[in-house]
Image (cartoon, rainbow, N blue to C red; front, top):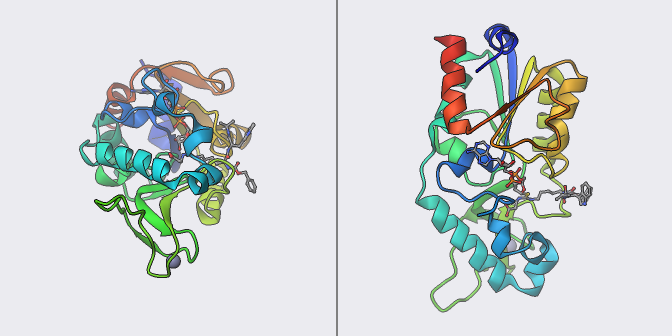
Length: 242
Ligand code: BV8
Ligand code: ZN
């Protein structure tokens, strides 16, 4: 299933960078964004995952995030997450860059995680920015507020919002300096995250995509492995390091 080049390059790699998207959590039961069962199907991004929508209808947006947070609290990492945790212990420098906000890489024991789009289990104040653990709507549907009186919002990056400066800087630094870049479970349509595999390729890394279906970058990467990350990643770790 794996090319000799990928096996050798991973064996010798001093630095591996990983980009994950919603696909890696799909086998845990977390719906992806753009798949047939995708979360966006019920709602359109412009309706919910942007600041104006939140200000216009905070209750709807909070209900959607509470629904997703509840769903995420009931799921466990899958063998794909676990394989990345194991890979991290086998590679000198291992940067796990994720677009996911579900916290499953942390739950799986990964250490060095760069969360590009925030963390759905955290909230932050619209006014003073203070962060707090996830809040749910109080029983009487009162919207969660900060002690300063500001409205709390999910601590995620919405469309049109800039990504956390430190995270995006670290992610591009990693893409530019890694020996091997794996793009896993992402449709590679959301920028700036989607440009990371291209930056890695231009910098001379071996870039390999592991995805259930081909994507807009499949023709740009060195190798595109089609299949489920929960099956492929444990096999890859075995093929390289056993
Ligand atoms: C910014 C957090 C500007 C919230 C998310 C036109 C062209 C280019 C760019 C733009 C444009 N118009 C607007 C933009 C910018 C926009 C963007 O890229 N839009 C896209 C849609 C065109 N980007 C932004 O707005 C970003 N900010 O650019 O700021 C700016 C600049 C300067 C100053 C001020 C402002 C912010 C983007 C972040 C948005 N937030 N999420 C939340 O989650 O509620 S994005 C959302 O999409 C998630 O984070 C998700 O991770 C991300 C990407 O989706 P994927 O993870 O790839 O998931 P998807 O379902 O799409 O794909 C899953 C894949 O897995 C599929 O391919 C499937 O086949 C595969 N799969 C499924 N199962 C498996 C599997 N693979 C393997 N195994 C399996 N089992
Ligand atoms: Zn506040």
